[in-house]
Length: 99
Image (cartoon, rainbow, N blue to C red):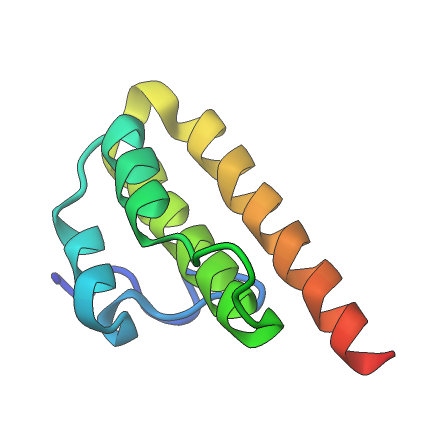
């Protein structure tokens, strides 16, 4: 990664792209929103996964969509909307854990 995307670039509770582990490291190679959807779908937690696994997924997916927003100019706003949706899912899970 070029270093253009630091923790300050990925807002909210996101994860810095250089810290995405394992298969999520493929996010660096994703160029389009379609590819991002495919990667997120492939790496989603299985049904019945723990809240912690789901929370981690949503945070990583939000990071993925923010990365794509900078690469796929034709879908920038849609990518950012997807990132916001993932952030909202993560926030709901965080509130659930606190209760």
